[in-house]
Length: 93
Image (cartoon, rainbow, N blue to C red; front, side, top):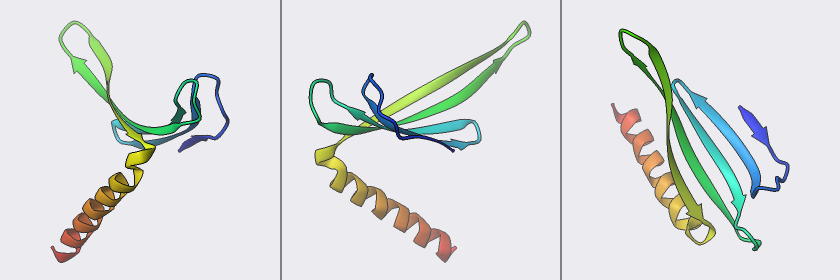
C-alpha cells in the first residue's frame, strides 16, 4: 500500500492506494480551491487489456466518487450498514 501524507500545491492533502487484482482503489483527501474545505475522492482504476490479432492494447478505466464533509456521517453509516449485512449473510451461509 502506498501512503503519502504531505501537502501538495495542487490540492492533494493525503492519498492512499489499495491494490486488488486488476483494480486499484485510490482514497484521496483534497482541498477545495481558495477555501479550507476538504473532501474525499474514491477512484477505482481498472486495467483492461484488449487482445486482437494485430496488437495488444492496455487501457485503464476510472470511476470517481466525491464525498463532501457534510455527507461523511450519512455516507459512513450507510457503508457500515452494508458491510455489516454482508458479513452477517456470509457467516450464515
